[in-house]
Length: 208
Image 1 (cartoon, rainbow, N blue to C red):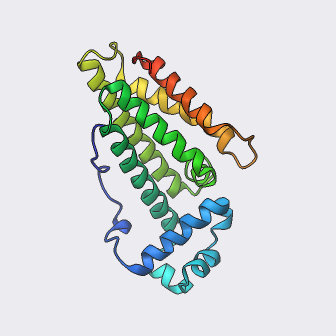
Image 2: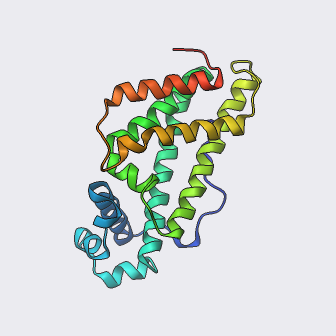
């Protein structure tokens, strides 16, 4: 991704982000999501894991839904930062695209339960709205990368926004079964290779 800018406006509840108790609650919630999804991340389980009283949780977050909005925001910001780092380590746009796709898919497949919870599991409308914001951010960053390739002649002329949306949709659909708690296991390296190859071909990027 060519830009590491944050999304337009931070949620008021997310600032300031300091405080050891707040961070323990977020860390406990993320750990529980990784272990068993939203069903495992009940308020009682979060407070027990973080060794924080329920009353303290509600002093930091007005509701469980607000807590999960912040959990999703924290995880998504970390993922965006990781994708940015992956993209700037490579040379050509084709290499940058390859690095971004590989980082995104391998990260999801290495933590499938967390990726399923963050990307696919039915959630409260507040969390779903946050999910849509970050999905749009992923698309915008990828479209920026494609525009660079189009401008310098590495990629053929195309609608960068449409191509970026199509790539994200294809990746998301391809990961549904591998990430699902009831899905079949896959060979991670083979799937990552296949998705990377598909994405390069789809936008007219040079092969490996």
